[in-house]
Structure formats: C-alpha cells, structure tokens
Image (cartoon, rainbow, N blue to C red; front, side, top):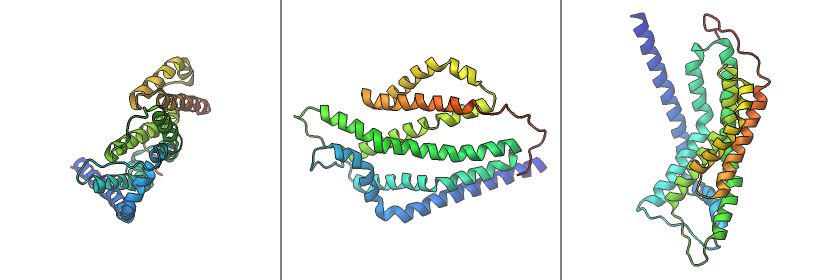
Length: 247
C-alpha cells in the first residue's frame, strides 16, 4: 500500500512539473507572439541574403503566412524557457540520485544546454551563410528562385536540431567515460571509425551537397576529440553507496 501511495505521489509530482514547464513555455510564447513575423524574418535572413535582391519567399498554404511564424515563435519560446524546463526535470529526479550523481548531473545539464545553443548559433551564423551562398551561386541563371516559407522552416529546424545534437558529443563522451561504459584508450582506438561515422552522419542529416556535409562532419569529429581530451582528466568511477545521499 505504501509503495502504491509513493508511486501515485511521484505521478502527481511529475504532472505538476510538466504543467509548470508547459505554462512557462506558453507564457513566453504569448509574450513574443506579436513579434512572430519578425522572428521568422530573422530566421530567414541567411537565405534572403544569398538570394538575388528583391526576391521574396512564397506561401503555398492558405493559412501558412499565419501558421508558420506561429510555429517559429513556439520553438523560440521553448528555447527561451528551456532553463526552467530543465530545472523542473532536475528537481523531479534529484531526490533519487546519489551525491556523486548530483554533482555530475547539474553541470552536464548546463553544459548540454549551452552546447545545444552553440550548435544552433554555429548553424545559423556560419553554416547557413556558406551553404546558401554555394547553392545559389552554382544554380542555373535560367531559373527563378522562390523558396516556400514552410519548406524553409522545416529545413532550418532540422538543421538546427542536427547541429545542436552534434554539439552534444563532448557531453556524451564524458558521460560514457565517467560512468565506466568505455575507456579513453578505447575511444582513441576507435577514432578511425568515428571519423567515417561523422561523414556518414553528415551525409544523412544535411542536404545533398558536399559543403553542408563537411560542415557537419568536421565539427562532429573535432567535438569528439575535445570530449576525449576532457574525458582524460576525469577521475575513476566512484564507488556507489548503498543509499542515495541527500542534497
């Protein structure tokens, strides 16, 4: 009976924290909603800069001019509220963690957030400019370019996710070494396979052009090496106590 009550209390707490996270995202969304068109224009700026002067994007859907900026605002709201969302996740799982796990998890959560945002920034400020300039420079002069706003949004968000996740590689490597799943020596040994895998990932998750593939694969490889380097300074896996320690 006591275990059942404990399980129900955990479900109630989980529901409360999910609601708080959702409310935080919605509050941010309502606050930035009046600037939804400007947010889309900002996201489309690297593409528009590469297109011939005077070119505009098109909307093929009936309500796409309203719905697409709204979706972009929703994504921005989630990113802005992400620290609070992660705090709710941390507060939910923290009581069940060991003392050494608490010391490790919180810095990793912060590092993961920062690295994910850095990946998005790298994609937006550097990759998009190079890729769009390359694509539209070699495009035939006989065609008229008119990108669709919804297609561009899907492309941009998929690229943001790909580069955001790629920048998480150092965290993944450190966690694997710190938890004893793999050793630094083993990571160095499989380096050739990682390099090949990086280019395979670049070919899968980027448009079918060599430039964007290299611009994902090379950072992935470099970040792996950074993770291996930092993991070399990690202490041996601590002995787990019999009971979770209090914070």
